[in-house]
Image (cartoon, rainbow, N blue to C red; front, side, top):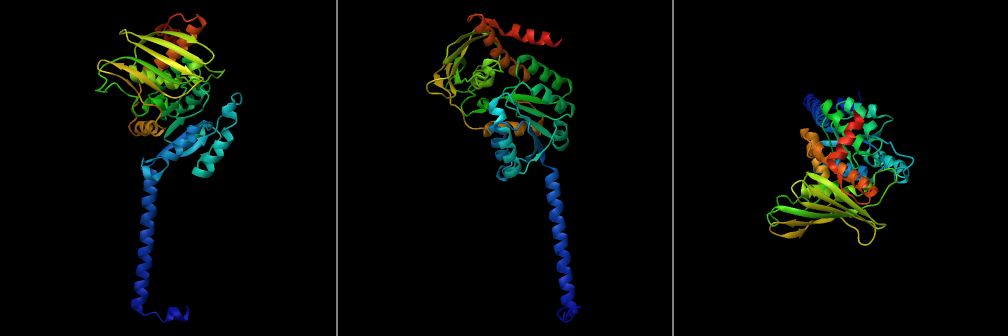
Length: 343
């Protein structure tokens, strides 16, 4: 023992020992509390690291100021080599998620499911979504599927069927559904909604039905405002513009205008029994992520599968109408055709 230690009085020695013991107990308690807090965090995994959404969503969810009780912890890169906007971004976003947010990057979806409690299916390409969600459903993980829900209507119907059959909560939505001032069905100034003209950019992608790639945003606005119940669709297309007219079962008319030139934006003009007023447009991703967090915490889907299927059927029917030179196409018939292919 050193001279310094030999000079301790018995009281000093006991006091220092008590302080040391207290420090160890406190550190152990803090460590235990941290471990408990970490255990109570809802762990989120991402499939498809090829869209800017994965950065925006992770940054918002993992911000400790928001106190969501959720955290994005791991990701599976995915990526589609035949779509430039996927192939050119997947490596960059994967590296950013690893370096900036500390995500663990895994090699398979099965491995991802072992590490998380819920899934964000974010692949920018809708075509692989059905195959990507199958192991997720097998693992019983609640799932949010970003737009487009799938690369065709049949795949979306099958995704929802599998989810229901296995009692796995699953839903999809464009962020525009939750834009401030988009939901207007309870707007007292407007009164009852009698019609709506919605609009959004509408770039095309050769591997997807025309509206699935970007027009989905404006179509989602239309259905958010009008509700489900569309019977038929007529479509007109020019180089710079898409125009689809939907007739609802109660006789109301709603339209979607897809923009490829001029001033582009998101929104709608809404016709009511008391007033005709414009909606607002894109309000960021936060309102959608707030709904996703509620979903993970409650297991309740905010958008019924039937409405999402109808939105996709509207877009698929619009493609059929284009082929028929603008003739009206039944949404019900389009849905039934998709279901019959799966029987």
